[in-house]
Length: 113
Length: 113
Image 1 (cartoon, each protein chain N blue to C red):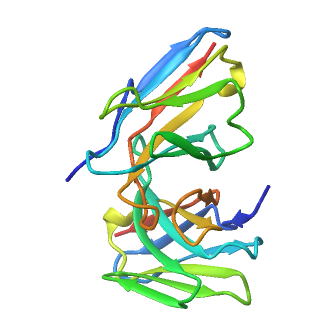
Image 2: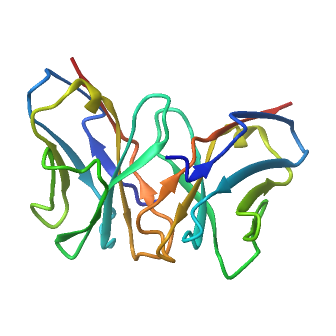
C-alpha cells in the first residue's frame, strides 16, 4: 500500500541553501496534507499543513506547495539550518481534516555546515 | 509547551502476553490516536478516539487490540496475546480538534520476544 510516496530516502543540503522535499500520492480522495519532522527517539512533530483548496501555504522558513493535478506536494525550507537535520514525513488525510493520516516512508534531511 | 506523555518508553514482553501502553494526552485535547511504526517501515494509523468511543480504526486494529480512556487523563492501548510482529514503536497523539496537526508523544518501543 503505497498511497503516499517519498521517493528520496535521503537529502543533503548546505546550511543556508534551500531544502526541497518531495511527496507523491495516488489516492485522489486525499484532500488534506501535512508535513512532520522526526528526530531519533522522539515522536513526529507537526510542521505545516495544506488543504486541497490551496496550492501554497507558508509558515516562516517552511512553505508547502500542492499540485493537485500531478498529485504532488513539496516542502521548501529556506534557509536550511543544521537543526533542520531530521527525518521528514509527508502525510495525507481523505476527510478534509487531520483525522486518520496516511504517512509516507520519510526523507532523511542532513544540513551540512 | 504541553506534551503528550507515553509510558513506558520501552517494554519487553514474551509472546502471548498482554501489554498495556499508556498515554497522557494534552489536557484540553479531545481527539486521541494510536499509530505504530515497525522498524524501517512507515508510520501506520491504528485507531482514533473521540467522545469516549472509537471513531475510526484501521485493518491492523483487530480484536487483539483495544483502547480505553479509564479516567479523565489516561488513554491506553491494550494488546492481547502479543505476537512477534507486534514489535514496533507505538505513538500516541492528541489534538484539540480534528483539523490541526496532532501532537505526538515520544513513543513506546514494544519488543516481543
